[in-house]
Amino acid sequence: MIVRITARRQVTLPTEVLEAMGIGPGDRLRLEEGPDGLTLKPIRIDRSRLGTLKDKIPPDYPPFDIRKFREEGYDLKLRD
Image (cartoon, rainbow, N blue to C red):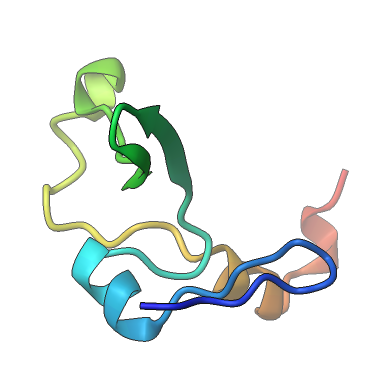
């Protein structure tokens, strides 16, 4: 599979790659260097670090969608 690097040094990954990794908009990836080259790994929530919240979030709960959050309007009264 070949991907192109833009003039701004950005890379667009094909949809099938993102779906196979289970990631979407707003998710983060870790780039790890190993003996066979570089590997991309999705950054997952470490549920053991959530303290008392870990039992309140179902395992199949969808990740936070930052793009959707930014596109939605909000009540100006909620600002500081």
